[in-house]
Image (cartoon, rainbow, N blue to C red; front, side):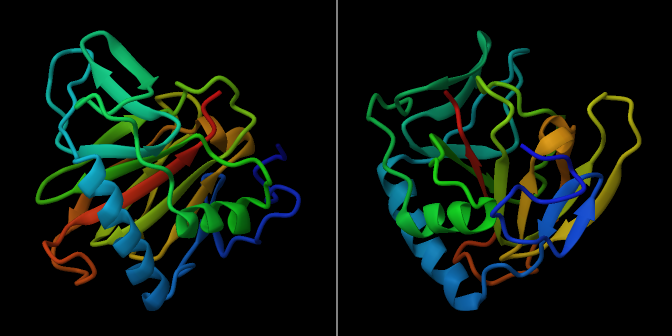
Length: 212
């Protein structure tokens, strides 16, 4: 991929940058947000969200599920991708409207193998981490925000690097590519009630990744 000072060739041009992460504020208009929400409802019905454990045995505050060839999974054995939901069922396919976001923003023909769906409610958060369970870090990671706003923190590629933060709102998209592909990042908190998109409130974050 390219360096963080420019989007990948063929990709959409970002509206802002945060420590090398390309931001696309308002990429999805209200109608597109509702259509994406509706197709994700079918994913969640087929593969209900669950609460994974960290490798240290602590339950995560975020509930999650996946779509695609693989889903991200965590327990005391560590972090990894698996080909089935904990129920034993295969993950549902990634909805076409979600794939359309990937292709339009990244400019890539290659489709992602996994769409991780994180559900944040109340005091759910995600500590600073790197996405490094994939086989090839040259492929970008694309994030789509739906529902309540979230405070997004991004650092560098070392855990102690300085961080910067911004609020991600419903319909915003972020792309981690180039040197920023392995940036430490996380969600400090959400702002409950800041969106009415999800009937029961909260925030859905979609993370699209090439796994193999």
